[in-house]
Length: 322
Image (cartoon, rainbow, N blue to C red; front, side):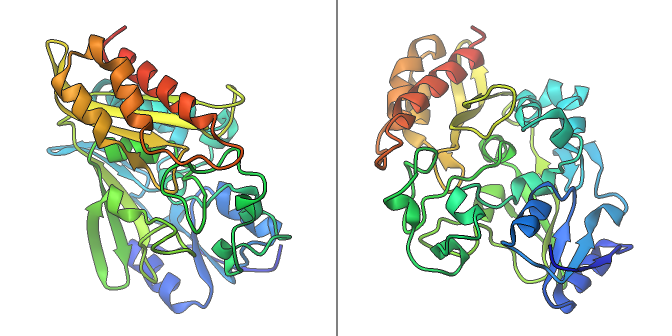
């Protein structure tokens, strides 16, 4: 790991100025992802700006519009929060599904939402893939069993966050702080496909960082179901987030978002259409097939198609209370 300077800003505005003015500066919260990249030689920021020194960024509080969750709130605290479990059960489930207890006790909300790809070609300094400014995607003719079957090309990463799919399903808004002030946007608009931006997965501007996420409670029933190789800890091979308003076994409003199968949280409107016109208890199989429609597997990841069908069907049955 190369040497770096450490900064403890007193306010969010101080943090934004440091991120803009100090060459090669990078925001850090829990450091679970960033420090791993630094140790592997993938990134070498000259300055680290510690967001955990900014007062108030770790708050989790109920508001008139729902819940506001600060960027440095700890994942373990979200998983154990009684209010979130009551109002946003899918979000609490997603937080509890992240990695191991040790990582949940260190990792932050902002870090989970803005973590970089876990593709082994990106993570290895031995490969110069396009995501790191090189050429081509070694996964196209190489190891791709865990990679994207939706939205891939020219890079085939999958977005690794467990929180992002459920927050997209819940219509959350992300609040960003930068040197020119703050702005907010739907969290779905925070993520970009590789076909639009090969080098970065996010729409952060220079000097910006995640300040908080605001989650409405208009869709009171929500679930997150995750399939992974090792149940004790692992990234999702396929995940399904559903948020809905359910009346007498029927969805009046519903969002279905997949995780672990695309470079961004992948909304499947075909599955939503099935759930809006059918009783929940009758819709699982048909909606699951609709969710997998349009998948384009690579040479080693066709197994993700039945995984999607399984995880969507499980999520729907859980939503129905089965």
